[in-house]
Structure formats: structure tokens, C-alpha cells
Length: 458
Image (cartoon, rainbow, N blue to C red; front, top):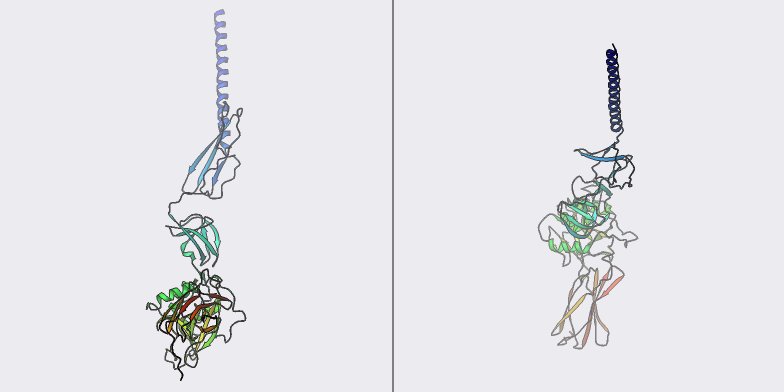
């Protein structure tokens, strides 16, 4: 009986100990599960809307905190997802250097990409925007747009890439299609192709305005090379000369629409001029080489020919470069006195389109013109050249006492021959005129003629 009671007591103690141990094990498991659930359910997640690299942000040093932060970057084809998870440990937290704060907002600005999978060739040019466009962050299609630019803005270009982009001095890129070396004119495309706008009888009150876009020197240089190329008609030749001078966007389909567009451009003015009694053309003093001349048919009310004015000869007669009826621009202009369309009308009248002047052209040159003199028997041959554009010139000869014995208007001709009736020493020079205000004098040349000519007493 005593033995049975003792056995029963021992079994009861063992059962109580077992129940206590089971209760501790269950509570420990529940606490661990609850802790894990709380940790992962509160972890923040941020999604970047544009591809970007993570920004380094230094966190403060800690030695007592029990939290560490781990940043995981997941790359996909559409975006980069950053997940930040926080776990609790019993150990001291090490220094954290790359973890952004949990409250950091998603990045929205594209990161700078300094890689350049293209080649750049250095340039130093000032170009003009020919149509509304955007610059790009990189020299490749699809690159982020940076700034908007408008027609005829001048931009400084420092390089060109092998992907077809210009690099601007501010580091932006613009496709080469959108920049040109001149001004782009925009027009109402419904202007008539068949009827010429009226030709003004008088010039405007102010003929001294400026147009810095047009360089007549380049236009004339092109004409001197292409006047006899046989390519294109007269209007196409005129348009090409103008484009070489820096003005783009004009039509090349005919003389009439070309004139209408010039008149509407606001870059110059037109005035009517006529032939003289001998059939030659005399131009006003404000005409300048590089201006545009167009023959007018009054019966058809259209322009029938386009030319590039090249100054005057020593007789004051206009010279011009022309296509079709090819003209090298070095002698007095002679052209049809009747309409080439055989309508029977006289075409004595012309429209002279005068560009407003480029200030880079209308200024004193750095170097004076050079005059040379060659003598033979009773005559002297004069020849001069200049590295600048002028509208007129005069040859001046003085005797040994300084008295002026000859002054002759030379236009833009560059040579003259004179006969002398005395063997004394002479001095010669040339005066050239740029517009109406600037006079440029050549070097002075002293010379003697070998023989004196006999004056004709008759």
C-alpha cells in the first residue's frame, strides 16, 4: 500500500514537469513566428520610375542599435526596383554606409551617363537653327530632350559626332539636320507662283538697315565658280547663290516665286530700275554687289530671268552673273529686250532686290588694296586687287607737283590703261568705296613713262 502511493506521487510530478516544458516550447515558437511576421510586413519598398543608379548617402555610426538595413536592387526591363528589409539581431549593429533612409522618395531625374559610344571631331562654328527642335542629353536617337530651340537661333558648335549630331558649347547635342550655316526664311507657301508682286517705284526711306545673315562675298564667290556649270535654270542658280551667301529656305522653282519670297522676307527691299537708251542698265548708288536682279515682263506680270549683280564697269553699266544665258559677270550686262516666252512684250524694266547690309562686310578692311603699274612707251597699265567687297572705285593720277591730272570712275573694274604726254614722274593710287560712307585708299605708286605721246592738234 505504501509502495503504491509513492509510485502514484512520482508519476504525478513527472506529468506536471512535462506539461510545463510543453507550454514553454509552444510559447517560444509563437513569439518567434510573430516577430518574423511583424518584421517583413512593415518593410518599405520603393520603385524608381526611370533607370537610375543608387545615390550614396552616408549613415551615422552606431554601436548600440540592434537594427541593420539591407538594400536589394532588382533590375527588370521596365524599371529598377529597390527593396529594403529590416531585421532585428541581438548583436551590435555595424556601421552602415550605403543605405538610403526608408522615407527617401523615388528618383525622377535621369542619372548622368558619361559613357560615349560615339566619336567626336572638334569644330568651331556658329550655326543657325533651321526649324523648331530639341537638344538631347546624348548624341543618339531616343536620348532625353534637354532644351527647345527656335528657327534662326545662333548656336555655338564645338564638335560633330559620327552618329550625326552637333555638340554645343553647353554640352547638349542637336542632330545635324536642324542646324545650318545661315538664316532660314519662312514664307506663306500660298504666295503666287505665276504673278509677281508689284515692284516699288522708290526705295524705302531707310536703306541702311542691317542683315547680318547674308554675306555677299560668299554668294559672289559661288557665282564665279558656277555661272557656266550648265546645271539648273536661272532661278535655281540665283537661289543657290543666295544660299551660299547664308540665306536658306528660298524656292528654286522659278523667278517669280523667288522674287515674291525675297520681297516678303523683310531682309531687304526692291526697287524698279530700267534700261538706258543704249539698252544698258544703270543702278542706284545704294546697290551693292551680291544684290539680286530680275527681269520683268509687264504683259504676263511675271519675272523671266534671275541674275546676281556684280557692280558696274568703268562706264557705270551694271554687270551680273547669269545662268541659262551664261554671263561671267565681268562686262556690261546685255540681255533680251523682249520676253523670252515670245509674248511680244518689251522687258525693259527690272526689279533690283537690295539686301540690308551685313555689318561684317560694310567696314574698313584690315589690309588696303594693292595697286601695280607697268609702263611701256607712252602708256601705263594699272591693275589693282582687294581682299574686300566694294561698290565703286576711282583711279587717281598726280603729276610731280601733286596736281591731279586724272581721276576716273572705275566701278568694280580692276584695270585701266592711260596714255601720257609728258615723261615727268607721276603718282597713282585707287580709292574704293564701301557703301556711302567708307573710303579705302590703296598704296601709292610712283612711276615714269619712257616716252611722251604727241598731242593730236586736230
